[in-house]
Length: 354
Image 1: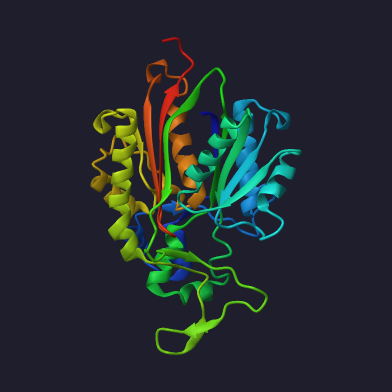
Image 2: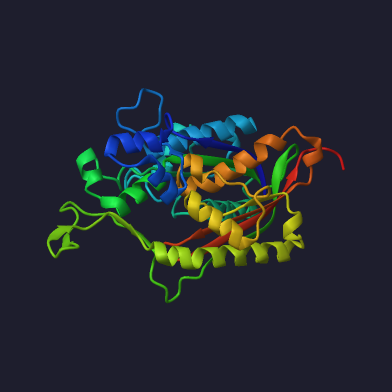
């Protein structure tokens, strides 16, 4: 499988720690120390026309940019895959709405519900479709926080310090890739791919709930009073304890499968949680800072979009560099919702004769 073009989309202007501190009565340095994130991007209902407001808006723009970068038209594509943890509706599928807005018809439009490993899940599915006879497709990862976060400033303040840290570490965004079975010209070629669940017997470390017409049930709160159940929760202790080791294991497995010496690999894409945890994971993996491709401190944790954004930022500087022909990439992503490990080994083909 060749990744012919990549894109990224972040909505509106960056929201800084100072912005959050001034709006919600927090300390700017405290936010940065707790999350390691400097900025994030958030979809807003009152954004100007042309600025994405929903997951589908982000996905459409990311798909359009990737198609433009690959110089392909809707008629050149044989499938669309959207990976997301935050679809705009349960039905119709956001993937089908995105396909319609991109001018795609008479092809499979698949939606995968996933989290941090979603981009690799989408590319894994794309590889199977290409192997079965499809020629070219579009894979998109997109997420928004709007359904998970309180709407009013008062409700955000009521989250308390732990909730505010969670609020500050996430962000909205999308990324996309045009993939093909074969072709010419510059592209990332897939050398190996890892994707499997390792969650048997483990409780989920991340839960996102959907409620019916009656809304969230009431559950006992911290002081015994009944409160509305939270839309989302994370077990940060379990994440901190398990993700670094799982990421290091995937990195070792990928390198062994393709025969690469990790210290010599030019670009290593580490799991993106927040700025603080990402640095800890990088150190645990033994990845040098000059090898690491990280973006979460500037983009926020935008879930399914992150690996696409990492790849886009890693490839952009070398696209026109003949010396980068043959550069190697190792991508790792760990999903803590029910413990999914994933990764890819890729090589840059600059289209130059060797």
